[in-house]
Amino acid sequence: MQSRGVKLLDLMASNPTRVGIQYDREAILSSLAKPESLDYDPQPKGLLQARRAIADYYRHEHDAYEVDPEHIILTTSTSEGYSFLFRLLCNAEDEILVPKPSYPLFGFLADLQDVKLVPYPLIYDHGWQIDVASLYKAVNHRTRAVIVVHPNNPTGSYVRDDELHALNSFCREYNVALVSDEVFLDYPHDGVPRSSFVRNRETLSFTLSGLSKVAGLPQMKLAWIAASGPSEQLSTALARLEVIADTFLSMNAPIQWAAPELLQQRKNVQPLLLDRLRANLEELDRQLGKQTLIQRLDVEGGWYAVLRVPATRSDEDLAIEIMTRCSVLVHPGHFYDFPRDGYLVVSLITPPQDFREGVRRVLELVVG
Image 1 (tube, one colour):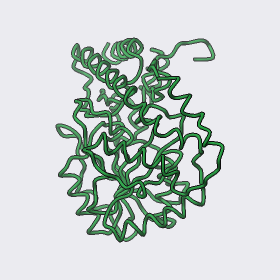
Image 2: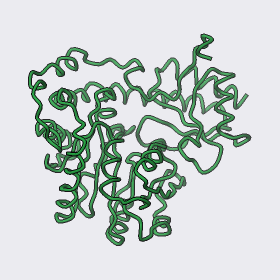
Image 3: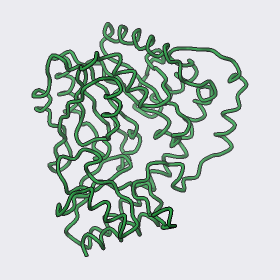
Image 4: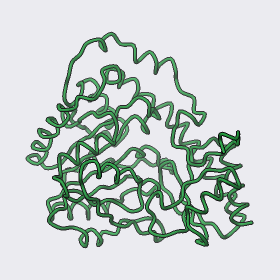
């Protein structure tokens, strides 16, 4: 369709650099021109200056919580962070419990590391919640970790305090680690900050995040693992993580030296994205209010919204029909491993004019 010159309205947008957000170009580009970048100083965990900048981010943004920079490992992406953790925690064919629905990245990374994923469901009942009982059904002698996404992508649901308590009890009982993916943590739709898992010391925990979402800078390739937990387990895990990181030494110097300035960009970018999210969500609800066939499920944070649609065909077929007949791109629910048909996922960072017109076309096709 694109080769024929058809303009497609992208309601799957995930790249913040291509949705009309205004960046501080001068500050970003000048941060990459530090003379220190010409020196090669291979530090397995990453340069201390960059790790201190990340610790400052948690102190300023998340309950003034102090994170020890020595508990932070820099990576080029959260994908690489997962790779490090899978190597740290698992031997071949060991198992990790992952939420369902959630982002499909986990499967590819697990295959590359010869790790088996075992899903546990998120249940929708007046909002999303973890099916804690399913963890006990899924665990066995090869289980090594539980992954949570906080907030989940695409459901936008944060882990509640009572769920965290249950997760810690489960992890202690079965001696497994807790891995929290928090890339969308700073995007609560109600404006109320949520606590980070970096505060969790009840069980061995690893928190992943990065510039991609925190500052809307996916091209800068800076992410991190922040480890926490009981002191003996934590020190052992950090020593082994350092060996893994030292093997790759993949972070580049210019980005590490630029980290303090790049993290500061969140103060410019996050308000713009939050305004975009809220405006598009309001527009979505306005249009949905004119009909009853399609329902928007509750969402607390993140960049996406889940629509429940009539399951008259597969989500794949519906998404293809929307593309071919309406020139609109949406994600079918199966992309995020929804257990059944009847779900579409739309991005809330799409430019407002495209979002408004795209939603109108989708409703016109599905509702009539």
